[in-house]
Image 1 (cartoon, rainbow, N blue to C red):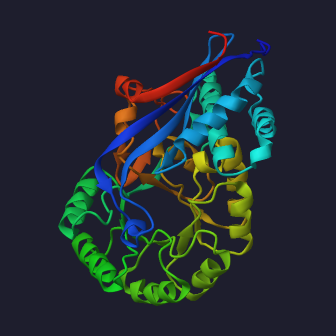
Image 2 (image 1 turned 90 degrees about the vertical axis):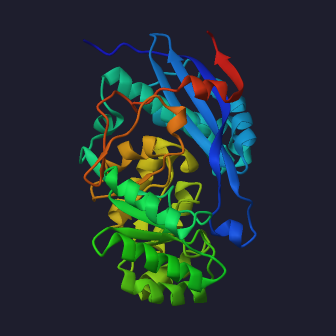
Length: 377
């Protein structure tokens, strides 16, 4: 049967606020740069076509930026109406130029991400394929590690208990936060968790950009005996040269990239050989169209991959990477979606459901604070 052209009929944009059960603190709180996080704000895009196809996508912001994403998306979404939803790269470019006066990174592209992701969800659903299969998967499951149990507001006993539960749930690795003003406390926490887990469980640490170059090098050397999978964000996210020096000096791999908000910013990271493991975030770089560009660059550079947050999206994308990746397990988003991702034997399984394989809950609808329909009903 020949392809029947379709057209985008409407884009429903919504902003919703997800309350967190516990106020979350990482090193940025303990150094006084941020307040504990109590909520996450989401931009949701729901696209429908003239032929009745539908797609769901989302972006998010922590602490600030949610209203700005929503405002920008409302301004530019009209440019998608009437376009063929299959032409995703063309649509991304059109939407980008519709709002190019505010730039091509940060809020400007994060607002586009929700629409871009919804288009991929729609395309995969129309094909009757999980998104990973539509893009071309290298595997049906991905190594997974838990982050949400390792924050600094939790006592070390709480961290150990959550780590044990994560492993029992089929999650393969554990990441804990470091970067406290007192580095001795960091080391004590790492030692306690390593002793609790034993030598064979993959363990990662994340300093959330709170060390300077001298501290990062000294801590990196002191952390070598704990056989870490990686040290994450030891330095400011934009210090490519400093990260490169650490990567060259230490045996423990360096991971970074989650805070960068465009492919161009990641290109500088890659060119400087500033990490061993790159950690892009699809909603932050502008969606799946941009993320796939970045994956090609990362693979050419021989980098490993561990996308940041949003496992509902990143599981599918990580499954397409030629090198064995990691995907980050967070349970924060569970109240938003009817479905759950399955973990088994240290891996997260790509769902067989078409598209992203998620639908919004009634609770997510109830948390919606504003919504607008762009286009016809």
